[in-house]
Image (cartoon, rainbow, N blue to C red; front, side, top):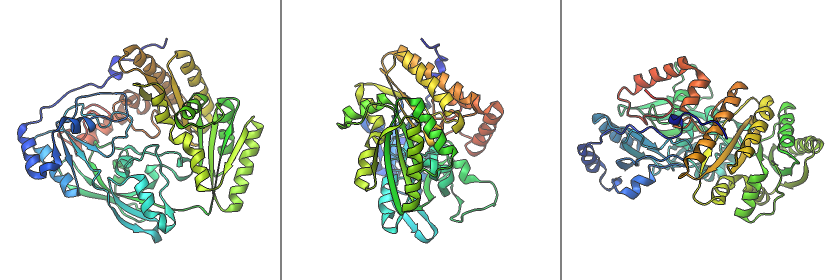
Length: 474
């Protein structure tokens, strides 16, 4: 059995602050029916896709404009009550939990695409626009937005957690693709960071400060992001391997040879089995790489031939190719349904998700030992990975009513993160710190760096009302 982790790391620490009735009355006077204290609404806004639980917020405000967000924050600041931003609730690290009480500000109704500047390859949207909605809005321009976390998350939430997804190996993460923001600060002031220009050296880079701040410095209300031309040609393939090691070493060679692959995703045999049962598919129940190539017809053909040669040398077989959108969608069903297929494979379970990322040359070292530990633990799990950029995810499927299972899973996670950090990796490639990785952040960055983050937080949020209790404690 794995050694237990520190108890403080297993469950969220609650430090609830009082929410005066006077604040609730003021919010209802300002927002009328758009301020809800109904228990079912509060519970919906007090839980994300993490395995944690906490009391729900005291009220939920449904914002429809930046002014709404600013007014709600001003009232919360007046009563020194916490504010938790909410998009669609798909975060994985407890970001939405009201661990210090407070109110939730739901920006999902702020869902307008404000301006499409096709000539400049940019678009500006309200924070509640989802990634699928954005791509639907811009498809007539011949452009697309490539950042694609598994869920249909909001652009504001993706910015707040510095999300990425399957296309990151070629197109980068939200860090590289957000140009400008509109943010409401802890005092209710509305500020703008960045411009639509491709570069700037004007002062501190406040855009990068806010991207990844997880709602702890302000509420994002508008986002300007980069768009990309739709590739002239796209081809996708799946390939099965005799072992995870063979699949991983194929990936390492692809990247080190400089093949400009757009997507390369790993799914282990457990996950393929779960997806087959969930989606009634007949995929070979072996470790699998899902790959996609973008470019001109000639370059796509050249990339595909190179990758197939590498994969074959590593024992890859049963290549299945797809060039039409319908065929590609079918091939990618396994990856997109992996999380939900895994959750349904054990009714009532919750997933403790890992999110390590390591330099590509150390991927095999990190991943293979972690697989051996997970297999020996007896805890059901699934494994998927954006292995083209060294990022992979275990999902340990635990019974939330059995503390011993949580302890074992957290022990596995602790070993995995420790290994990743020893290989000069990170505890979180794309999910964010939230509640779950606060201890790991200190280990990764050191006390000095975290203290600098605290200094910034105290300066910008002196009342500690912006999503308190996340990333680090004050």
